[in-house]
Image 1: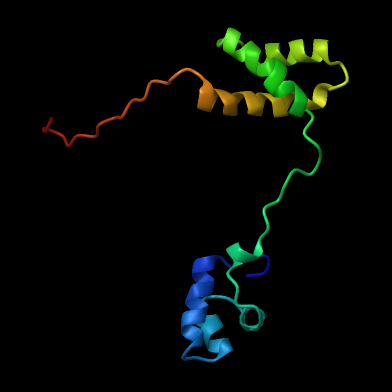
Image 2: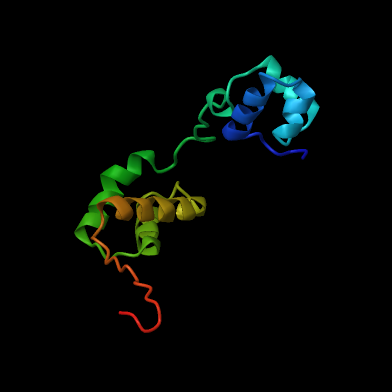
Length: 132
């Protein structure tokens, strides 16, 4: 199917079939086109080995502010809402702008998931009718 990426397991399947079948037959058995089969035969590296991890597209606007100012606020007042933290940081640093609000919220949620208070965990039990 056009526009669909070939995952590692599908490529391994193709390479397995390629040992005994032609490129077109192995590609058909692995469920992609013969053209994709020829492209893969030319470069047999797995897709996960080809990809380079993508970094940030722009510099982090909260790099110098988060550890120095936001983390102490979160430690001092654990119940502080991200919007209140955003307003305080915007008051201290008006050059940040309103575009970093969502980034700040995500960063606070991620920080709380690791360093915040423990959450209650409930494992629901599914019972058959008549059995407890």
